[in-house]
Structure formats: C-alpha cells, structure tokens
Amino acid sequence: MTPRKKLLTIESMNPRVRAAKVPIVGSLFTRAGEIQREIQEGIHKSFTKITPCFFGDMQLMGHKPCTYLRQVAALCTHPELLESALFPEDAKTRARAILKTLDNGSVGSYNPKYIAQTLPQKIATYIQKRDNGIPSHPRNIIVCSGTSQSILSVLWLVVSDAEELRTGILLSVPYYPLYMDTVALSGAVMVPYYLDEEHGWAINVDGIRKSLPAARRRCNPKVICVINPGNPTGHVLSRKNITELIQLAAEEKLLILADEVYQDNVFGDGATFHSFKKVLYEMGPEYSERVQLVSLNSISKGITGECGARTGYIEFVNIDPEVFEALYILKSFSVPSVIGALMLDVILDPPQPGDPSYETFMMEKKTLLYNLAEKARITKEILNQAPGIYCNPIQGALYAFPRVQIPDRAVRLAQERGQKPDDFYCHLLLEDTGIVLCTGNSFGQAVGTYHFRITLLHPIDELRSILQKITQFHTRFMTEYS
Image (cartoon, one colour):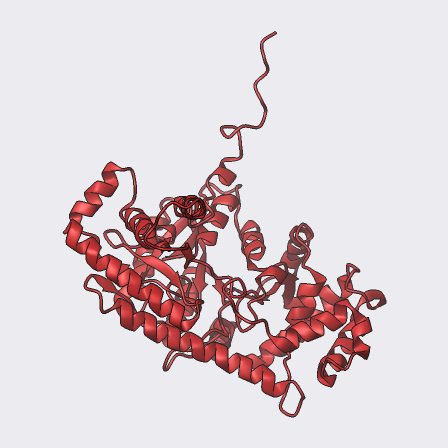
C-alpha cells in the first residue's frame, strides 16, 4: 500500500498562522540558551552569565508587586485570611465588598455577572474620572483576557473576506510585533506609516494622508493602530498630534485602535498622557459623534505589572451595539480569569487619602515612576556618548529604541551570512558580552536604519553596567568594521 500523506503538515497548515513570527527574539534567544549551557559546562567566556534585556515582564525583571493589590487578591482567594491581623482593614473591607459580588462568594466560579456587568460599571467610573468627567457607559466596555486576544478579536470584527480588496490595517513603524502577527492571522494587509524619529517619534499625519491613495489601490484601509505611550519607542504623543490623527480618521473614515496599556508609565519631563477618547470628545460633536474608536488597557503594565493575570478591557466609542453581540461570541473562546478581573477592579480604584494602605501604595507608585525616569535619563545619556548610537528622549512605557550605525562592511558580511545587519550586530554583541537585545527589524524600521530595543526594567546600577558594555562593544565594532 502506498503510505497516505499526512493531513496536517507545515505545507498544508493555515498560511495565516504560518505567517505569524512571534517570538521577537528568535535566533538570538536560541543562541543565548546555547551559551548559557556552555557556561554551565565550564566553557570559558568573557562573561559569567546571559543578561536578557528584551523583557517587558516587570515582575520577571524584579519589580515588586503592588502590596495592596496582592493583599486584596489573597483575601479574595482565601477568605479565611480576613480574620488575620496581618492585613490592613481597608484591604479587608475591599475584599469583602468584592466577595459579595461574586457567585457564592468564590473566585472559583465563572462569575459571568461580575465580569460582564459589575466590573464594566467600575471601569466606566474609572474612565470618567480619568477623562475629567467625559461620560463612559458600561454597555460600551468589555472585560477581556489581556490585550493580545482583544486586538485579534477587534480585527476579526473589521476584516471581511467578502470584499474585492483585502482589509488594510495601518500600523506604525516601528510597531509591536504582536500587531503584525494579528494582521496576518486576521487575513488583513498591513499598511505601514512611519513614525518621525527625528521629532521624537511623532506621527507624521500628512505623510499618512499622502500615502493612502496608493494603499487603496491594493487594499481597503479601515483601521489605524496607535500605541501611546509607544512600544518600542518610549514616546508619548502630544495632544496636538492626537488631534491631527483624529481629524485624519474623520476625513478618511478610519477606525482608531488605541493601545493605551502604558498610560500609567509616563515619566518624561513635560510628557502627559492624553487618552484618545478625552481628546476626541474635547474636539466637539463634529468628531465625537462620528469617529469610531476602540481603546485598550491592561494590568500587565502600568504600576502593577501583573502580566500573569492577563486581564484588561476594551472600550468602544460610536460602535453599534449589535457589534458587541458578535464580540461576546468571540470572547467566549478566551474568558478572562476571575482573579485577574478582581485585580483590575482593585487597581482602577486604589486606596484614597486617609486609608491605611494609601501611603504605602503612593510610595510604591512614585518609586516606580521615579526609577523609570532615572533609568530613561541614564539610558539616553550613556548611549548617546557612543559615536554611531542615537537615542531619543524616553518619555514613557518601559523601553528605549536607539538607532545604531552599522558600517557598510558589516552590512555586506551580514548579507553574506544570510542575516539582517542588526541581527548580525546583536549576535556579535551577545557573543562578546552575553547581553540579549531585541533587533530593530523585529519591530520594523525605516529603510537603511538599524535599531535595537532595550528594556528599562533592570535595577539602576545593573542597567548602567549593561549600557556601558553596549557602548564599549559598539566602539570596538566600529573600529573593526569601518
């Protein structure tokens, strides 16, 4: 008998899934693992350990969890602790209030009413307070299992295979790789727009406007994705820039997908977070009644860094309610964790002045933001001392995305090895120092430019040492390949 060909192979697999490229570190991560094993086997290196500098996972990198948040979560998951003297009274009061809203007072239940009704009301209250009283309605809010699945769900709602032209999704370059993958999985087409590196990574709205006619010849642009504060760039959009983008969306009938998960990580001098919704409503009915907006937030970043809880929310503006019904069906495939949901509940309504936990909460928050600001300053200062590296001011989020000069000789060698020039650079850095960075091509970059992303999450002294090793390596690299 002739053996039957297997049904599921890499060739027969869904091409949309095959197009996804996560993880962003790729071969660097693989080689770093090999080097770590070599060190353990006693093979001599000029360094004693691998130093990962690509994580946005705050707690993995040593960030202390929010005390009050963890106390309330502990009390809710083990109510017997309510009798313990180890917990402050305001944490106990908050836990009792949450437990009363849970089915049978248990986080182990599905708790559909809490997730679909009670929590959206609390989120709406938070948003309304954040945006200086601009109304927010629970019916426009959906609690979700983090932003990754949310982005894909929203794109599934927009993308249509029934149209002659494929759906176009405008992505900033640099972008977070998750967006490139969700565009591929949804069957849409990426339409790139380039952030202006020379002007602090601002959005060049006129450039987008001029590029749309050409894009419409190959696809139907429907959505513009914006990450503010920016990942990987660390920029924070000005109110003027947001206004210009909203005007563009109105002119071109684009839905705005605003990823605002880093909204609490703003620390640069003069930088202020402006939510897209707030700016939209302040522009008046001409815009607030017709521009469609989807905004995202999560507890994975901010002051909590609860990546493992994987819970966030989506708010819809000017979206027909019937659409929500379709999204609820999609969301049923990825129900948020009840523990993550109650963590979201707690952090959106933290301790207030006079509460026993208030001083500790504020101290932890201020310490985090102060340290990020100091690390951002150090990163820019040290990297810009190296000829051939340029780092913009870092205003928010958790990363820097410096531009690095790579000589022509190194570019040619990389091409001969089948590597991209910044892959070549980062591999040499890894072999020389043990430092693992994210290459700029993982995020997209203007043609002829090269970058890397580095996290700001290491302790200050360790980060300073890492940056000095990078600049010393770069000096040697330029000497050898220029």
